[in-house]
Every structure is written in structure tokens, then in C-alpha cells.
Image 1 (cartoon, rainbow, N blue to C red):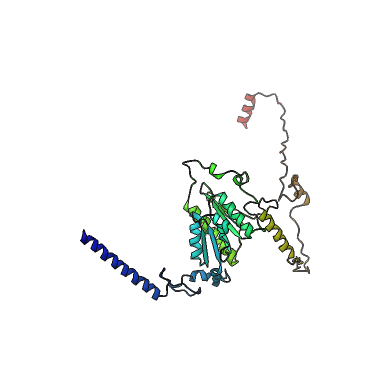
Image 2 (cartoon, one colour):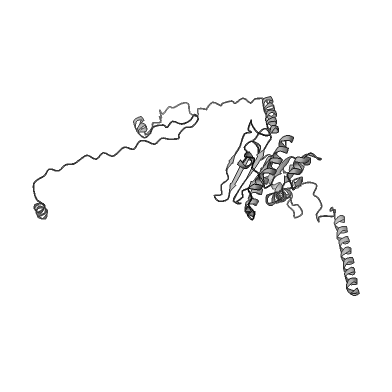
Length: 349
């Protein structure tokens, strides 16, 4: 028994020595004592094994991003580190984001989590319930903080992302889901022994389009989506933008709308100049004319009545009325001959 304890003590001492040597090696190598690679002070486009950013910097060389290295100056806060949030944090880190702050619960945001220290450039909501989304929405409206909301459906085959700029675009309370609008407690909707479906693939897709939208927004390239959906069953990606609701229940949202209107009114108005269509060939010495192959009468006959539609809606074409083909009636006089006589005539022909 004593020998076994002595051997264990010796083994612990050996491991402690190895750990001390490893820490010394990393410190001498210029690391921080935690990771094996020293922090890279500047992103370089040089293609070498020791440069993890060479492929990212290639976006600048290809003319997609003007200054990709600017990504290191941004700070992003992620609320919720589950299926979507954890993948989002990993992707942003691999993209070279300057700082990622993670919050496990939404109430950390509402209790001043964004006001401590340096403010973040963007808040990403990766929570899985409406109550948490409303908490983030309230805090961001109060602070005027731009944020992006994301979510995956209960059946795990659809999801969405949404960019929310307080005062400029609709907040989460401007067009709330039925559960929120009806003040229904979400806890009463959950049945015991029944849980929502979960697909890592759908969560990965939603996290991917969320981070893609973050990069486009921060680095100012491509088209930033205000709303982008994903339907895995049909591979359908609907997109749209929503204006803020002037009667929004969130008073801070209404306040942000008024401030946005003042800023927009203060901006100099840009006059729209309509360019006159240039005539390429003004002279027509050969007397060439364009003549339609369809006459006015034929065009009229091929068109149908225009339906009564609301103002602003037009039809691309009309369907002409169907004309019943008229077949002239043919009558045959009765010759009085029997069928046998007619058959005999046919045989003699």
C-alpha cells in the first residue's frame, strides 16, 4: 500500500515538471501561456503555413472587401450559446473578429451588460424563446443598439435572421408573433415529455447566414439582408424588409423612430436627374421603318377585358374570350332508296 502511494506521488511530481517545462517553452516562444501560437499583431496576405488569415485577406485582393483587416476593430455580443450561438461564435472567431462577448441569458443584456466597458458594434440574438427576444429588443431599443435576431422553428426545418436598426427598421415588438401579441405564457404551451425538434444542419445554415450578414454589415460589402428566411423542405430563401410600426408598444422604439426622422430630415436631399435618351442614329437616309406584323384589329381580338383591380396593380396581359367554333349544318335530301339498293350501287362502282 505504501509503495503504491509513493509511486503515485512520483508520477504527480513528473507531471508537474512536464507541465512547468511546457509553460516555459510557450512563454519563450512568444505565446500567452495558454495557446501554442502567439497573437498575430497584423493580418498579412502572405500565403504561409504560419498565417491563418491569408485566405481571408484574399477577399481584399479579389476586390470583394476593401479592408478586411478592419474586422479586428469590431466587437460583437452573442446572447445565447446553444445550437446557433455556439456555431456563430466559432465562425466569427475564425473570421478574425476583434472581440466576442457571450451572454448565456438575455437578462444579462437587460441588466446593463452592454454598458459595462467598451460598447459593442453589434448584438446577435441566438436565444430560443420569445420572452428572451423581447428582453433583448427592449434593451437595444433603449440603448439605440443595432442587433440581429435569429431563430430556428420547432420542427427544425426552417429558420431566419433579421437585422434590426432601432428607429429605421421594424423591431421585434413592431410585428410580434401571436404568442407575444396575445400575452400568452410560453411555459403553458410546452407539454410534459414533448420537446422541440433539433437539427444541427439547420442550425448550422442559420448560423452561417447570420455570420455572413454580420460580415457584410460590418465590412460594408454586398447586400445586407434586413430579413432572410430559410425553408429546408423546398430550399427556399425568402427575403424582405419591414418598416417600423408608428404604434409600436415599445415606447423606446417610437422614440427611436422620431429621432431617425429628424436625422433623415436634416440630411441634404438628393435631386434625381433624369437623363435624356440619346438618339443613336438621327439620320435615316435609307428610309427604314419599323412595321408591326400584327394589325390593330388582330391585337384587339387577341386581348380580353381588363379586370377591376385596386389602385397600383396592373395585369401583364389579358385573356381573350373563347369563341365557339360554328360548324355549318349540312342536310342531305332523302332519295327514297333503301339501304340494300345503296349497297348494290356501291358494289357496282
